[in-house]
Length: 261
Image (cartoon, rainbow, N blue to C red; front, side, top):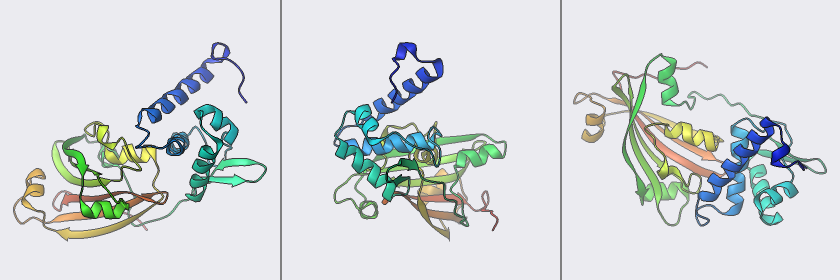
């Protein structure tokens, strides 16, 4: 248990405490109705893991320490850790404590990559234009997320490489998993990067189509009439929740999928 006061901490410890405090403040800025206390704790734990502060196989703070840290009942902390254990984010060992679960690597035909990173890897400049960012009562999205009532969140973004559009992103997001989604600036950080930073994906489904886009998508991708698109549909899970469903449209003349098996 840490007993030193802030005034007597080493600079590195002070910086770590300031980072912890900032993350707790961000979690608490979310309305309680949108994010219950146990969800705030789950998000804090996942953030610490995704940022590398808590390593796979490492021991995390005890329930008692988290109770003191967040000022909540022990049953609230217990629920958060129990759910993260069920989601295979943590492992709990009787008499020893709670540990970050070992990383599991799975090979798939398609890797979930950030479009901005792909473009940067080619030595080119990425830019994004946000066309839509709003609540949505889309019936299919609500059903996919298991929401009895809306809204879900909906965004449409055009991603460009060296000023030429190469991807139209049409995404629905589960507000239970990402309650702050509508408050982000996706011209600066892509949705993919934002979501993976907060809550790493546990599993995903893919489908690929060759399909002609409608006039709206075609205009934003600056395509010729009749030109087909490579359409990638993807659904991802965080824990037991469907987190997002996205359709990614790519002009066939400017984009291809590649991979190794």
